[in-house]
Length: 83
Image (cartoon, rainbow, N blue to C red; front, side, top):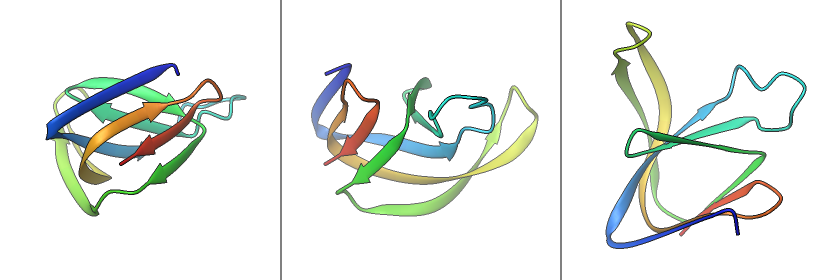
């Protein structure tokens, strides 16, 4: 397992398409506590909703899928799971 996070109080996450994936299969950006993770695929077993927030660095509003889960994993093949 590359990444494993668990929190009973919940983990707030944002999912965005990775426009800078280049020649890689890392199509998804996952943002948790301002830390970014990259993944090839997503399995989301937690409630989600569409959302927007202002990106201070870029100076624009960015749209994403957001949610809260109790467990977050990225396996050795870069597949992300939210439970």
